[in-house]
Image (cartoon, rainbow, N blue to C red; front, top):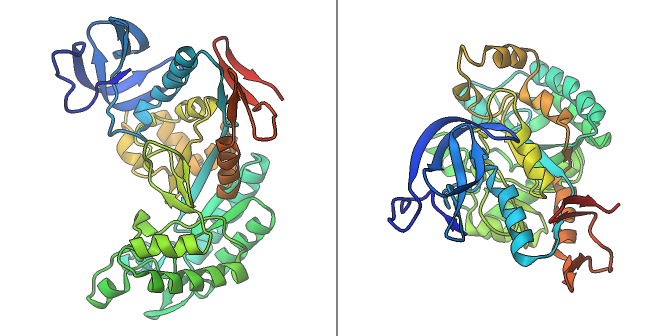
Length: 389
């Protein structure tokens, strides 16, 4: 198996390929982005743009960039690899349940938003949350909300509820109803030293020692436990972690959200996301790339900073996507995702437990079993997906 989408794609030993950009319609979903399509070889994966994977001289070639892990436009790679391993290893592949994790960051707002003049009012955020909680309850979905513990009032740092009291009350009710799951998002969501120089930098934990990071985490955790409930995870603003911050979080047994990378999704106390946070490859309201990933056991992690996917407007064509634009005006991505068929949205705590349980699956002969001797619930076999219970 050879990945051919990187800078060495023009190597004469590789099948000829072309680089194209646009919308590619696969059998599972339509996605947009840059693609590599092969001009020779026997196609294995095709879209409306051409062949994305081919077999040539007994080798499998993928038009995928090794550095593109987490791109929605390369969702097709994961199902292909799953089938490849089943065929190559000649045994079933144990799959995670078809789950995913939705996370809404900076709820209901942050001091960064306040200083930049783009913070939503308490009334507006409370209304949005009040509409959202029953939707997620109806969709039997859980939403992780990353909340910073502090805000600014008259230029002074205060507990979050002094700036967004109504919003905090709705958040508290959503957590009590097991619809929302709180995630620690630090204290002020600002780099204190940069702020003293008049610079607004959200990377609160990027340059902290273990002692200072621990002090800030303890403040944030104490506030969250009193005001919302026990957090199941921690995400630093802008995913910016100093070595001291990572050490402090591990010492407190707090799972840490990290950006996507190839490899294990649960590594010690670090929980790796599977998708780049902007999901730029989504076309219109076609979310099927997410269900395709969940179907073969890769839990999609979707991170939003508002009602729409990040950078959403840049992905929509004003004429070609007019229907999607009008529908998004009525119901945003955040409102639609809990009803996406084929995925059960879980909290960070449940996701970490699913991953830990999956890591205990071993192979007895050619059949995967758990540490208790049970077969996994979902297997991918040569004949397709098998659900055992």
